[in-house]
Picture 1: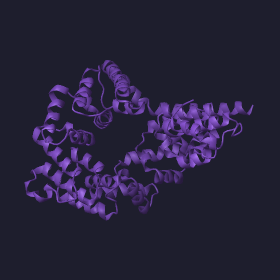
Picture 2: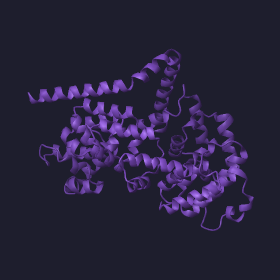
Picture 3: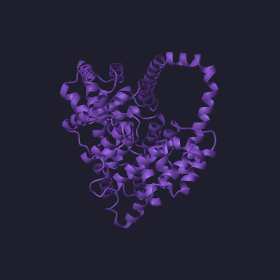
Picture 4: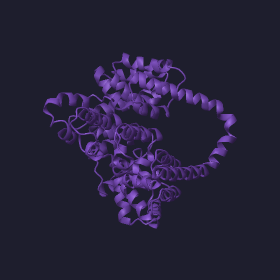
Length: 455
């Protein structure tokens, strides 16, 4: 009887959230309907192109479905002819499969570039700069967007500069010695500023996206230098990605705008110390509009959080601000449809805020494995919500397969160990706890653990 009452209560909660979600999207649906006749054919073509792109990326490049789906939102195509030509051309210039996957992941639009008229000539320009084939493939796979530059002079300039940085032996560079010969304007500023950042210790993986980017902040001169000084004075470490994030934010926002954003957060209950502590954790925290900030605050309250809990969530995981209201309502509906109560969802949200950004497919896959296949209870997941953030393929499945193997041999009894003892520890901690103590079974258990085998 209790289970029937519980099921009925959860059904009512699910219906309640579905009604809320429907009310939020009424205007969107009405707008979509008014445009349906003009956009239907385009939408069908786009869906076909996206589906083909996902299939192609998985089969031809060995990408995961999740990554392929993400890339397909940036580029789609109706047939394999041009993508095949691009891959064939890259291979003919010495790029291996791993490098090609890296290039396409970073610069997916390359798949729809004309291989003969655009990509081929650019590769020939780079090849003419001298150096070995391995040097060419290393530089392009490190900075794929160099293939998006136009004009022989521009492509050559950036290629030579990247090569100089990558292979610098610590001695004075030709760019230091011949600073007076840098090109004028934005290109010269860009190279000068990148060199300054390199001298500060900014690593290559952060420098090169800035070099190729068409945006700010590295195109200026005086303002750039002023911004770098501010960011350094704030205590950001140049070797970390947050330094570059802060560089973007400080460069693009006036002092007045920053003061206005700080005022919004203070009205919501954050102290000034809180605000700057969060900024150090995630600089883009100050980039959102007042409307977006207020909307997120109210949406989290709808999730069952009181004001103090909303503040705590945003202090812990400020990235939640960028999640749309629709995404959050979809997340609530997904959890309720799986049998979690509203109070349980609230507990999960407080314990692991990133869950509101996950797709329904991801949540359902992990729920199916943890609860349906491994027989852990809903309460187990509620008590340890970070397990929802772990990779199925790399962490959850290999460890659980080891546990099932031990149980099948009668070495663990009939019930699973606590979910926290299996999934929260490090790999070495797991191996010490469940593998190494079984001397005769270590080879077999290690094969299961490293084989990513789903049983």
